[in-house]
Picture 1 (cartoon, rainbow, N blue to C red):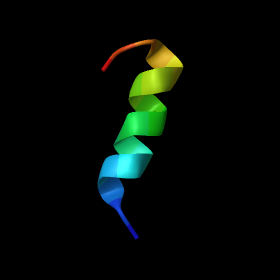
Picture 2 (cartoon, rainbow, N blue to C red; picture 1 turned 90 degrees about the horizontal axis):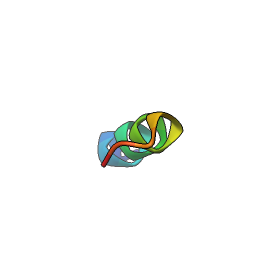
Picture 3 (cartoon, rainbow, N blue to C red; picture 1 turned 120 degrees about the vertical axis):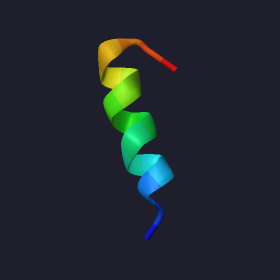
Length: 17
């Protein structure tokens, strides 16, 4: 799995990159 993808989803949820 790729943790970066999970972090991206969390960041997108907050509207942050």
